Image (cartoon, rainbow, N blue to C red; front, side, top):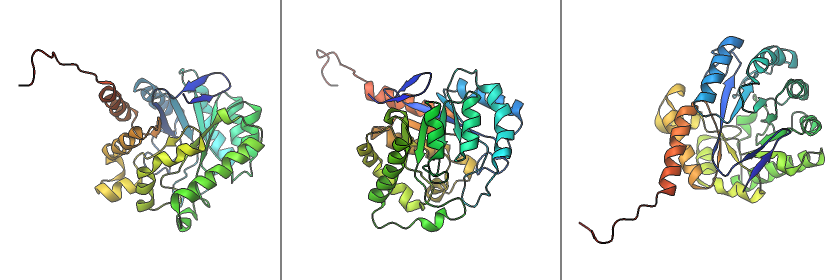
Amino acid sequence: MEVWRLASRNLSFEQPRIMGILNLTPDSFSDGGQFVAPDKAYVQAERLVKDGADILDLGAESTRPGAQPISAQIQLQRMLPVLEKIKNLGVPISIDTTNAQVAEACLAAGAEIINDVSGLRDSAGEVARVAARYQAGLILMHRRGDAATMQKLAVYEDLMTEVCEELGQSVERALECGLAREALVIDPGLGFSKNAEQNLFILKEIHTFKKLNLPVLLGPSRKQFIGSVTGRDVNERDFGTAACIANAYEKRIRFFRVHNVAAARDALKMLEAIGSANFQPNARLGCL
């Protein structure tokens, strides 16, 4: 049984876990600008938890392709007032940042997880050292380059082998910086340094990442590759997102990062119900 060790609690992945996305940015690809105000962010956080979020993931800097970098000061101006309002909702708070200063301030203010989309490359491992000091959980995502360059780097000779190896390098760096292996989760980084065809192939072969012997987080929510298949605009991709979740669930993935928590939770409830169904017909009735 996979267990994620945080400073104040352990999270088991015996049952699926959902991370609800709460963007505090004006320019995120799906919901930019909607929850910048702390009061609106709090209402959305309450809704996500009510809908079944096990974790809330706060981001104050857009990581979409082409996004402009944001200073630590601005990230913290956006993040800390919201973190203060929502930290008592009963679920762990994750901070989506590659900046060690932001990570430290938010962990000191009550967050329990850092979600590093650069796999520690942006901070040369300093984010991991901060997380180790606070005994925080750390998510290591696969990405090449940065927001400006990553889509130019989506060139692979052996996609699955290279992504696994590069994630493995991030894991080794985290361990060298003092984090326990039980504090780590990996994310193959759908949509980051990958084109639509590559994203679909990763979904097809998602079980491959299990060989790293760590919990796997999948973040397909509303991403462009879903639109390339369905023709849907960004906020009409929750059905496509649910299909990605169902595919990954069947391949033993149990951790999902989404915008629409209610839809994801319903999909997972149905998958679990189907998987546990055990109807035994009355043998005397036979087949009609």
